[in-house]
Image (cartoon, rainbow, N blue to C red; front, side, top):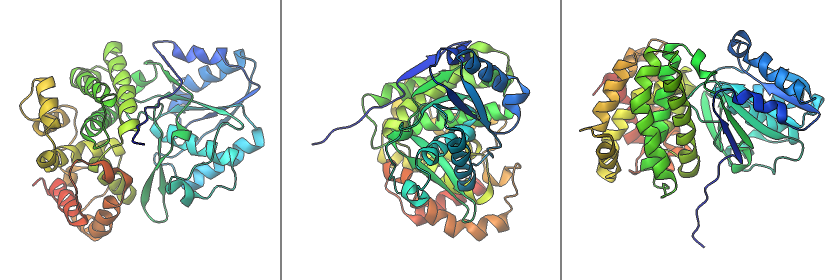
Length: 380
């Protein structure tokens, strides 16, 4: 039997004021999972708690999720939930908080879970104790839509993309007021993450007639909306366009998977703690050029967008939103030439073994991955 799947959250609630949907939920207890202080600082955590209390629920908070959530953090969160016993797990914040909540949920329902089993794709049957709602504050990861979570093994400097339809959220709440608070550089990084998701989903070897239209529309929305959202953060139309683009790209890639851009980004993020969207943005044009020998779908994107060269379009968009086009120009982390070369072989092997490599349109090798990293570092 040769069949495919297309799965997304049961409900996607979108539009300004979508946060109020929380007041309609039924249950006794809810746990909010969040990251740093931004959701509290802008009042969204309090708003979510008040809406849940309107629904008659007792609320607990699991916070302090780091930018690259670790194995230790998700196990800790699962233990805190086990003490509270919520009916709803509700993630609110950036992609890190969303990804962490998914795996905390696993450890809440199954405390004896072995992380290596999750890496191998062996997930238990969830929803035995709680359901999952995800409320993104950034327009980037699409974790509110997907069956993906990225968790970092800090001891070995490896980001593990965990994949199972079991962790697809039950409800996604998309309220453009949340991402409207993002500073410009985060708007840029997350927006390029959306573009990478959509392009990789479209050229994936597992793409289908169900995922392609979603990916193309997400690409169009980013083309029209990202630069505006970057320059004018209060432009709610541009914010909504990017928030919808993120969700649409998520619907595509959670059902088609991704490719080498994400394989390389996962591993350079694990080695250098580099922001994921930033890594994607820098790597994307090099891998478009590399993959062209194996697919004509980049030509189809160019035709749809009315542009001559997709890799050049990405480079130009990077420049417009303040992102460098080489890894050596990245300043958010210390990526000196000596440090880069020191980990290059290990990083290349790990990236080649990343699950996203399997659906890249061009077959690769550790040597090819090493060349791609090197090209992206020096701008070759």
